[in-house]
Image (cartoon, rainbow, N blue to C red):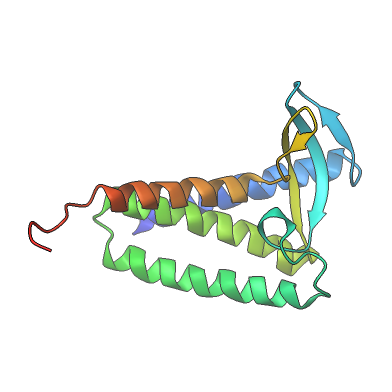
Length: 155
């Protein structure tokens, strides 16, 4: 179980370090153009993914914090029960590290720091961070792992 928790810890610290670098280098809402389709930005997100419920009045901070804590406990239980399933545990470790990274922001700052902004012409993907990326990769690996499970011969 220790190796899975180490992966979560690495994700958490890379997320924390990257957010601290951006916060110390950019002003809120500032854009730094990197390529024709990517900017570094500094956005504060009080909601969830894609700023869902960002303008909900403040209760969402507690709700999403509770959900992150609950999900983290479930993930820890699942990893401890299935520690031999490498892809499954890797995926859960990535989700856990990302969830804890965003939880840290919510609890310590009152919002999540987003700084990666991809776009094409006038079409923008919502800004995100390394924790969000880790969660997405982890969920994709969970789906891949689940799709590759052998189905019973008779249904």
